Length: 221
Image 1 (cartoon, helix red, strand yellow):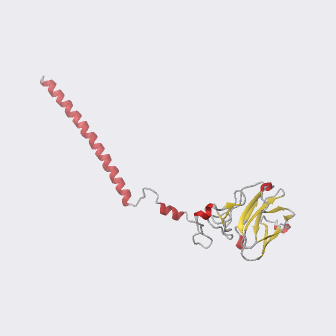
Image 2 (cartoon, rainbow, N blue to C red):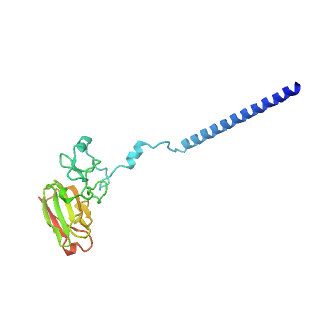
Image 3 (cartoon, rainbow, N blue to C red):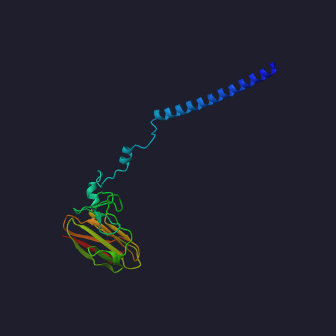
């Protein structure tokens, strides 16, 4: 009987030691996790992105480096595109992006504040209000058109031959109004005409094309 009691006592002690060791391991893990979290906090490691910082990093600036003009939400919601995929036009004739940013004609083409060039669209689907130009090795047809000062203008350019063409204004104030088209395709762009009356020349910006006659003018009245 004495041997049996001794053996049972040894087994109980062994179990207790295993339990104590397991508890010690759990405590050590908890301490390590706590210290790691504290260290990250002391080093200013962010736990989650801060909305204010995110907004600041995505703020759009205009050509002059100041924040771009954004129309009120109700004005943006009431704006419409004159052609599929083009910039929007508000009720008071401002051309804006889909994000509500007022476009700048002197921006870098395709930049966040520039008027948006549409994807390829069928020429026959363009409404009558759109100014339509064909360009080929023989030049632009027509090679001039009239617009009202400050008014929204939607212009479509079609490559009428087997060449790629790039519509581009010579005046830096219209540098963002550019259209690139592949052979046989049509794209359009919507922008506000300059507020200053006069003639604004344009050309195909592909090297050598302007020299062979691919030029024209927009007359602002």
